[in-house]
Amino acid sequence: MLFTVYFQRSYLETFGYLKKGRPEVGNLQLMGNEQEYEDDFRIAIKTLQEFGGIPVTGEIDTATKNLMKQKRCGRPDREDGEDEHRRKKRFAVQGEKWKYTNLTWRRPITIELLHGNNGIVFAMSLTGK
Image 1: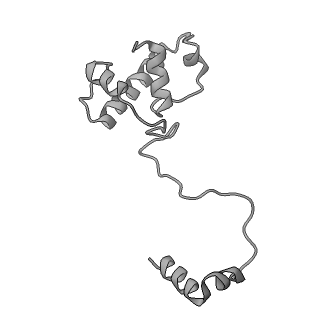
Image 2 (image 1 turned 135 degrees about the vertical axis):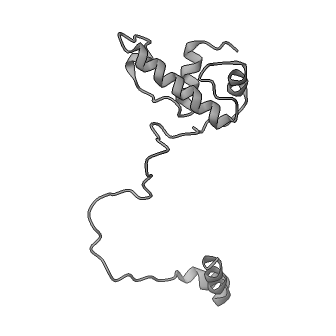
């Protein structure tokens, strides 16, 4: 496996350590942004090393290469642009405030047909756990 700059950058982007979609990085046309990219890259490597439980050097050393060679799922370790110091939202604001305050519910007749009242009792016992 060749550890080219492209492979390293691609790996770090895929698993959420470097932000995707930066054209100056994507094309490697850094045009005066070399220092910013090097800082971002070094921080990404340090974060990967810390997450992988290997010595944090900020360099692509043997331990880092071995970590990057390991098989793994395709899910990122970090979401794109995730900052561990920021508070994470646990909701999404969408649309307008819901105008209904009285809620109603009904149970489908099929539950009674399939299981009788025992099915409802069983379902209610599951929701309480």
